[in-house]
Image (cartoon, rainbow, N blue to C red; front, side, top):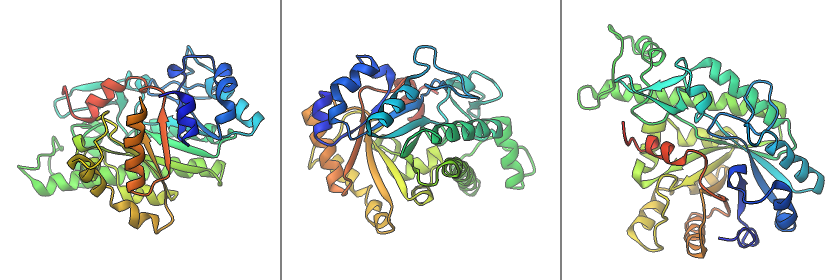
Length: 336
């Protein structure tokens, strides 16, 4: 779908330099008159950033993209936000000390174990650096554990062993063999993740109290909707939504094709978003994020989904994010 068409329909763009077909200057020259609000990616899944950071490595191809984008929006009065990938970080994942593992000892290259204090401190610094820029909103992407199959690194197993007061070092959560221990494992992960995300949001708002911070919350039929997100990613829907009264719902992040209006899949999805109504009564703001809207038909499907649950803001990218296919497979538990 043409950029101008998206903007005239009120869609907010999340701009990644890897998806631009023109220079950043040309992008603003061509579309600046249509832009009221734009989100610029500050850190992508490579683990590299698009600005000069004290702690994070700069992207070799686009080392100043984020800084230049914010300079332009600030100069011409366009509202702006930042998108920061958190636990998808290929730079740190290359280090064995930060890898995330299955119970069989298999690791992946695109995501880190969230239970690493040094990485959390790194991300706190990144979040603070980004919050210091002239942005009004911050979106935290790629939150949570990679999948229920991760993480069984030594740190996670030993910490859970002490938490659960086990006689022997914890090996694997098996819902069939020991349902009680499995549930304890899942809830321990949820508590860990909730605390970590709260740290990041608190850090950002210490720098800029007025900043709106939107944690992303993926919901996909292929990964089991809300229950699957809690089990696989360790994300607590209510807790995330209430942290800054803001939540970005990622609809069908791993299933690119949106369901037809009126279909069973469409109805099922709306039913699984029924929580939005009650949370809105608490003053929580929602956005609906979908990776790309390729044509008019897909835009209409996205708009229909949003209107059905009374979400007015739709965010999209101009192309799939870096390493999308590999992360999709990880999130769905494929290939492990």
